[in-house]
View 1: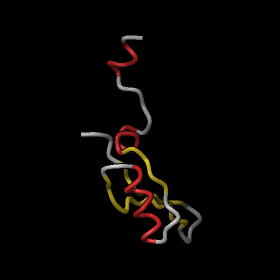
View 2 (view 1 turned 120 degrees about the vertical axis):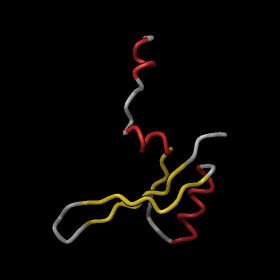
View 3 (view 1 turned 180 degrees about the vertical axis):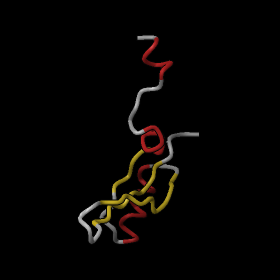
View 4 (view 1 turned 90 degrees about the vertical axis):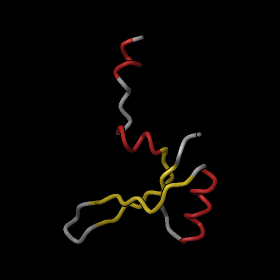
Length: 65
């Protein structure tokens, strides 16, 4: 299985804060981008692993450097 992609929409709240919402998970970046177009949202497609781990490098990866 390849990398999954999440369609993420950032919403500005009335109190001035921002919240990110995942609108869907797709099997490819192209499917994610197609869904954003179809849904007419200005969302971004991110690899799911990047969202789950917040862009952090796993310990086993940095330990071997």
